[in-house]
Length: 245
Image (cartoon, rainbow, N blue to C red; front, top):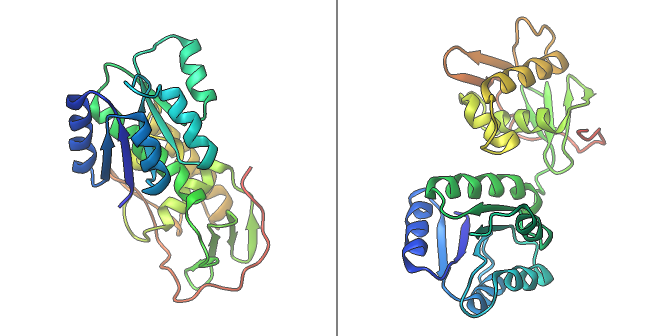
């Protein structure tokens, strides 16, 4: 399970965040001190730092700066500073996102999950090589982010790649539109249903023999989409291919 380090000096907020994060299946470390947060970030190697900027010992900005000096650990900032200049300054310190107080705990969980999804490929070693599906009809290389369909490299946008990789991660499983846009763009995106349908339509035009009668990406009416080819027992040799644009 991913581990989140919460550095927040208000016990009620810290406990509330811990409760919501653990309920969502995450492991949580927590402290109310910036200095201890730096130590935990260095030695416990969490997957994400949830950082309050107003701490009693070390300012949160200094904690972020120090963590950035030895780690690329994703940082989600909690701040009561609402001006655009303050938010920009926080992002310039190396924060990946921010939430202003008062906040919804559920919103924090969603933002944490969105960051973990975005950063997981960069943090994980993918030494498995390309994955093959449907007796080699579709080949996906997660490490190099390219797709080959029926022996031909396919140029995909970043969003198309993320959608295809998400669907192929669990063949025959139905993914809702909301879940897919979470994977591709982060949870907060207006008009996600219409957006997903548009991207799937473009993706089908690139990978299906007949996009009007799809065999790879199937629509499940009222539910979402699923990737139909089953994963082959062993992947093919690695080959060069295009990267998403």
